[in-house]
Amino acid sequence: MVLFLEFTGTILKYTQNLVHQDNFMKADDLAFDRRHIWHPYSSMTRFLPSYSVISADGYKLTLSDGRSLVDGMSSWWAVIHGYNHPVINQAMQDQISRMSHVMFGGITHLPAVSLCRRLVSMTPPGLDCVFLADSGSVAVEVAIKMAFQYWQARGEPRYKLLALRHGYHGDTFGAMSVCDPDNSMHSLYKGYLPKHFFIQPPGRRFNDSWCEGDDKELVDFLALHHHRLAGMILEPIVQGAGGMRFYHPEYLRQARILCDHYDLLLIADEIATGFGRTGEWFACNHAGISPDILCIGKALTGGALTLSATLTGRHVANTISDSDAGCFMHGPTFMGNPLACAAANASLSLLEDESWRPRVAAISSELRAGLLPLIEHPRVYDVRVLGAIGVVETKDSVNIATLQKWFVDHGVWIRPFGKLIYLMPPYIISMKALRQIIEAIVDSLDVPVHFLL
Ligand code: PMP
Image (cartoon, rainbow, N blue to C red; front, side, top):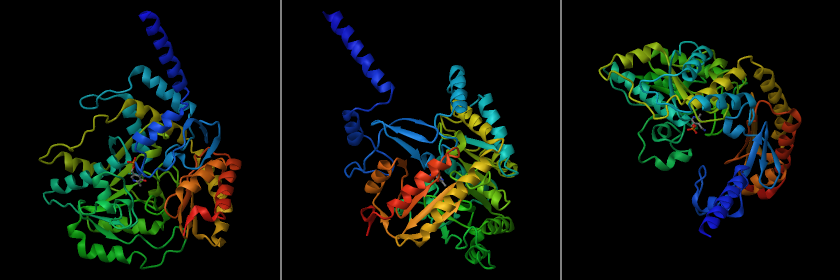
């Protein structure tokens, strides 16, 4: 009898696993999720619905109830080649059978070496030394630590950075300290965060003509305060989560010139913009500049696994390394994770033939054709498109819950926030599917309940 019960128990457990193997969530799984699991920027008491996804392939997400959604988000900039990509999957499978992880202290491996070789050759010139980390926020922490350790090593400690208002650099404390101190979600922690300096972001838009004096605030600030700064951090060209604004490349060029002039480190956070999203390999390429420190993440693995990197030049790396400290003081447990490196190598190999360029250009023109006319809509404040990024800024904040549901009911996955309905679809999206997303946005604007007046 005992044996029989054990046997049926095992069978039951096995079938339960089978049910879970196809990722199907039952009602009590959803209830557990709601009761016990934090989602990004979420409340445990005021719920926003979460949709159960059982699989994702190409540019489509499949929900538990069988509905299929066209993905407009690339899972927050990351899944540039689409989901379930056979080349990335194969690379990960091959790597798993060798080793999914091994420590990076005192050990090295080909997946990391191949990846860093690629990164050194594809990023803007001069970025020869690579630090691999776990997430975008950690890449920013590493960049800030590099800047501070560099100045310590020069015997002149400096712990202040210049950053742009409406900037966003991540959720960890160092990264939060250089996000917009008043208008960002992190203003909550203002009392605790180290104080840096902030100036207004450039007002001149990407496609406008640059006018002399457009960088006046930067010029004036640096003339007065450069001696107090270790460097300047910015998101080149595209300010992402802080407002989805696209600014003029000349600003970036001038920032480079001024940082050189005053001997300051320029840190470029390309975690969102890297790997083709803006129509160039990196947003810095629009201005033809190299930063002193570059942060990348998100699309680095094609969105398959989390991995980020902070690159710097030989001068910064050697100054830190030759200092009394004798090393750069950071070394995460999962640094250089071979599985993530294998996914990144596969993702970068898919980019290498540059076939992403015409695809990003096609997405861009479709976004322009579909979204720009919305500027006439009474609910719309602004519309902008750059590369494979489309933004509709509304006059009133969106009601995320109703608008998200409406999008799902119309077969598309878009995650608006604040006054922003924005798109960054996978590069492999079909034009027909892209039009479906655009039409959903256009139609959603006529439904008053989606907007908080
Ligand atoms: N910097 C930028 C520009 C980002 O867009 C993000 C993520 N939205 C981050 C840093 C932080 O990356 P992660 O979420 O991987 O920590």
